[in-house]
Length: 264
Ligand code: 5BU
Image (cartoon, rainbow, N blue to C red; front, side, top):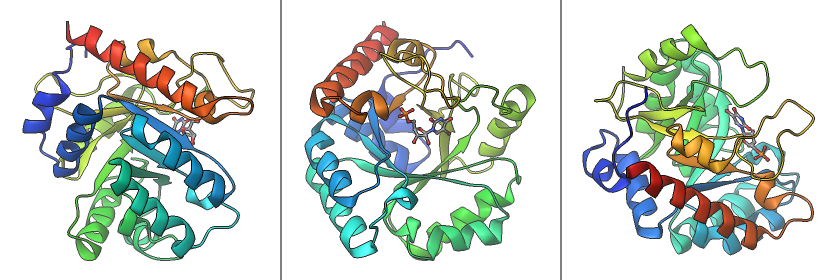
């Protein structure tokens, strides 16, 4: 839909998800709609990036299963401490895709125990409503803290099958539990004008157009003017040869300028 989303500040007061309200509060306080994607193999690099880029982001997105030297004590515990120091949320980009009972176990157990520390996670809509029920049950069972789920309504990659009717049905699924399912990974604003789904958008880059493996990049302004609330940037900020602090400031400033322009 083409309806311009309201200000983060007003959505902070009215969103049905407690986690989304907390997220908007951080965005307003820190004046940033930037999520940095930390796709790195070493815990030292991960934690160092989090400590240096923390002031510029509202969310850090992780893939903890690619960290070679992962342990709960040496990665999760310091990451959670840094999330308090710099006031950001953690988003483990797990992309759950199984039946409710299995995703509940994958969310709560194993070596990662994602639900204990990751404020946000995501899931494919493919299995149907049971995937949301399973994850929500896991969150309720393990923690009293706010937790939120994003459904993958669209993907940034070339030839993605998540389009058209699949995307529409994903939006319909999210309507079943908006206290937990607070938004989408998507490339465009989704939902009706009177609904408030938070749109987080990967595939954002100001220098490259693609990565040779199917990733497609749009600019910050293309994403935000199209309805993205939070831009997700990985290699554009932390890629080889880049100055992560300078790039984080550049994307943060671009994201906030596009947001202000959208409000006018
Ligand atoms: P990049 O370095 O900015 O291309 O990293 C993008 C990140 O976002 C990477 O961690 C992907 O797993 C993630 N991603 C994506 O690129 N596109 C999608 O549609 C989804 C996730 Br969902």
